View (tube, rainbow, N blue to C red):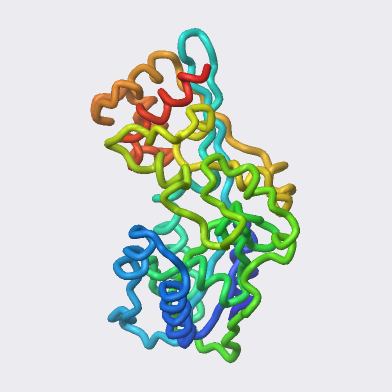
Length: 305
């Protein structure tokens, strides 16, 4: 059955793996050990305590396994006309489909499995990166992002409970790419020092992604103004990573925003007031959920030009 799924997903550039639900108990133990052995910040502790849902959902089928789907992501290159210049700004891999892809993939999987008499249910409230690494589907990079063969870190892992029986219940002890032991490129390039030499777990509250995805406040004074380069998120550790060399050669979409559209975005008004073209582009690129941080983030980039 897994081969059937893999072949169907390969046509869309995706990958798949399966494991048993017994892995959930082992993941909980992993996270407990992490809390006991590592000095976690309040955000990381809250993520472990409140984000994940370990209870099996009530569904109309017997849950026997977990299906992992790896979706290939792409970078989007944006250009904003501003004061007579075209300012390049990137959207790191995955943001352009972040809110659309889950429903689309779930619908596809339900149809695909339904043809063989099976069912599935998306389960977004599990530690997808850890599950992917422990199942052997992916490996962590030193930057705490997971890498899938053939995709690098330009990927997103989606999880589904299914009623498909599985004979193999893989549980990998090798979680980190071997090349990370002697590389250190991401440690050197991290603009905020969130990736550290002396421990694997990054300081999430120093990560530029953490800082620029959240709005309502100016950037901390310790943040170097020159590091801003993305509409939100950060791509420095991924673009320097040797494991992403092939992915960086992939074609990317380029989108231009006119001077007037840039002005509207900087004003921070509701999307309901936007002209149709701008409104459609914002929705198509999944920017709407982040609109509140766009004025601050763009101004930080424009101030360098």
